[in-house]
Length: 508
Image (cartoon, rainbow, N blue to C red; front, side):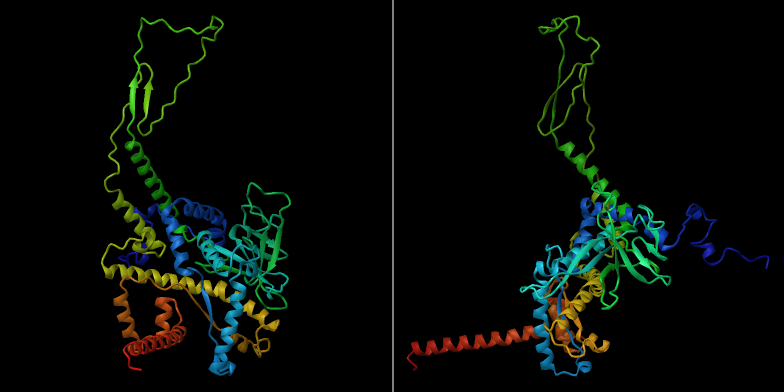
């Protein structure tokens, strides 16, 4: 027992307090409220500023938006025929009608957006960008009067993360202090939960807290998460949680805020130095003649303030500028040799680390595919795993719930017939079945990938529908119907040409 080494396992590794390299590493982790909510306001502002000022940050957010939703995720009905007990022909007819009705609502900005600014596809893009930039975003489901042109009352209003916050008048809730209590329920940064931790309401500020236009008339509106009588959501919360018991999201740029900021500063300093060095400025030194009498202007006399300091001229460099220096003045320039040797290599290494943290391979982040086909293909495959994951989450948090609320109204007002929709939850879920098609994966070598896809289908590893949807963003069945019509037109055109040739050759 005397030879027992007390530093075993992690005590002699990452948890050691004796190793010199770890002595100063005093990591402390608290609850998600303390680690996230207390710091989220600062993280949001820094994430937004980096998006506006750091190209790499903007590249990450914009690339995600383009690949996740692109021009917009398109709804395609996907009914469960076994549960509904309807024929495939009936299902196809129902799907065509429902998809047409949904397009009537979602393609017109005045039909679906409470502010009348964006259609449903543009709202998707805005929601994804705000989600990644600020950490989360909210969609308020509102109702307006239906019109002859728009038979649906559903409207969406996106609420930015800052506006969902703990009210001032809530016990314990102050600006900068995210926690409060509302009628016995705990409020975490604007998210109200019951004693079991379940989200039951959100508190929305009528203005942006902390804005220069902040007024004393600011109010908070409490919105229940789910309607008491309908069971439908009143508000949608789009976020990506990283810890249990976490009620607010964190900007996607949070792990790389410091490294991106420093990279931006380094890049700006290199750029500024390069611009200064590129200027060709001539400095002319003025030598005064001691025999020359001073030039006395009329009106000057002894009453003139002799102690008045002479104004010091301000010299500015510029392209081709000629500047006169004063007596005994000179200027010396260094030779910085801009750009600094190794700048590109260093920034590439930094951006690779940032890309790894953002789940964005360097090739995709910087849009630089200079390596081999296999390496570039591998980078795209890794990136698309993340894009597909985030697309699935976004569909679950935003697109599908909106569609289900819309479909409930469409069935209720008789625009769409769905027997048993309000009677049986299982039947209701079967009617609500859908998929959301979006941008397809980027092709580096279409010929190679087409041959690989053909092999996948031939061996039954994938279907034509899967290949068409995943790689081309289209619907295989619709493509086949279009091809059938095209082939009919081609045969008809060829027959017409043949008859014309026979007629010209006197064969008729």
